[in-house]
Image (cartoon, rainbow over all chains, first blue to last red; front, side, top):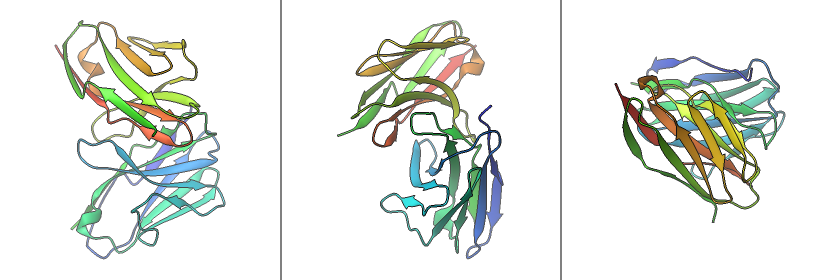
Length: 115
Length: 107
């Protein structure tokens, strides 16, 4: 149980392209979903927290107009990287949880490469 | 200030050589402490949740324990397939990840 599916697993695209990443909780309803970014050999850096039907809460330094988050249902959240540039290249990981004393369950990440 | 510190940063073990990873935390109102395993290029895989001091959880060669200040992940007779980065996280008013321990088990 507690499976989170993230798609796509890898994206390579040209600078200026917008990229959408999907995160789905397959066998549970997630009241909260999270988006992280991870640089090589570093821990996960929280970008934003989203609750179903509400606006996402962004961490300090994360541009909300750059990283658009939609949490339309209890099983789906999307992250759109708008007008991506090479510095946006990274490993993006989503997670989902049922409640705040339950563990977050993670997707397998999306490797984004902007040329 | 809330924080989570993991040690050591990296650990190399011979196959069969048992050891422990440490997660020290300072957090207001602990709601849960979580252990994850992360393989390269993958998202973290959930291992254990611990809620209160004295609690222990076990799964195969792994055993997690919790006190009021720290948690240990004990690895008994590790195998090469146990090689990964092990992450500790705590949920207080916010969710905090430690920086992880990179474990390498040598055959």
